Image (tube, rainbow, N blue to C red):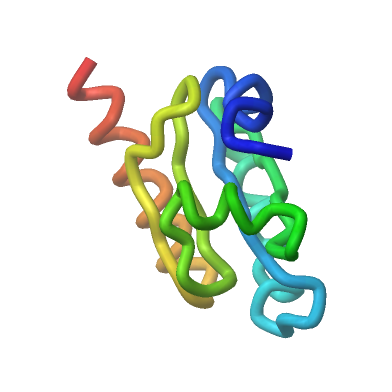
Amino acid sequence: MNVVDYKEHLKGLCCVEISGESCANCLTLMPILKTLCKARGDVRLVHVEADYSTLPLMEAWEVEKVPTILLVEDGEIFARCSGFQPEEILEIWLDAKIEERKAKK
C-alpha cells in the first residue's frame, strides 16, 4: 500500500502505530495504545506493519525505527513519538498533542 492509499484510511483523527512483528516493544505497546485510544473515544487506532511492502510508506513518513507512533488528522502528521514509552507517559503525550491540535483550529 502506498502513501496515497493510506491517506484514504487516515480520515479524521488517527493514532498510527507502526511496528514490526519481531519487535518485543511493539508487541507490548499495541495493547496499551488500544486501551488509550478506546478510552479517549475521539481517536481511531490504525496499525501499520513495517516490512518490505510498506517501505515506501516508511520512507515518506520518515520512520527510522519501530515502534513509532504518529498522530494524524485527515492524512496530515502533526505529532510523532518513537520507541517504547510507558503507559502513563504515552497517555500524557497523546492527550497533550491532541489538545494542542484542537487549540490550533
